[in-house]
Image 1: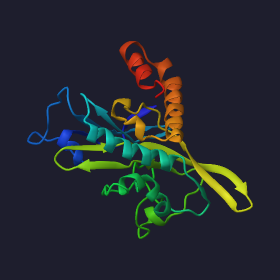
Image 2: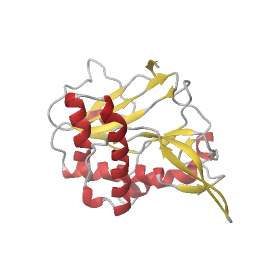
Image 3: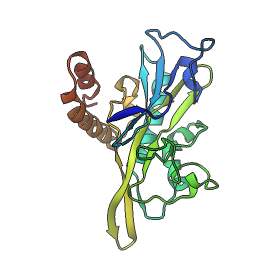
Image 4: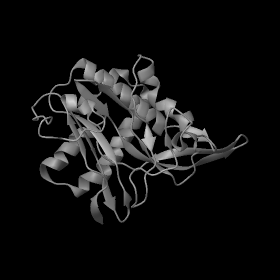
Length: 241
């Protein structure tokens, strides 16, 4: 059962979304308008586990630039989710998968791609994670089955908007081959990704297939629990691309 927030929600509209750990204050908060994009990072504590999720949503018609940046971030999140890797692989080795599409355009983000998450404990909990450097335990720790980690690449245009898409992923065994034991990730977080922000022609067939399968699972799990406008919204967001 639900026990409370796992951290104070980060809600950033437009320029405030570019502040990675923004806290709304009377002198900096913004009024939501039917335009622009909103970044919402939140989580809960449950007896069954700890959650952390970020979604970026369009409150109006997004610009081509916003859609391009959102899709670059999404492609990185999908790439890391779909990774298969030998046992002993560290977070620093995997982190590049989430940044590669931004790097190709000379873009980047200034925080780690992911952190360990506890089980009804700390929402930021080591030792594992995804980081560009192996200096910290987050970057150098090898992944093991059972580890829950956030996968949250982003992009932040200072003074304009912020984008982040975050799911929690579980490390599990994949296969044994002549070259060793291999691991992969399973997605734990089930919530729609805003299709209005996706530049669909930037997705490969494999990325499109992954996203459609993900949304099919989201719809299957969430729709029976909802009614009225909420159910219609989930149905619309989870339509195949």
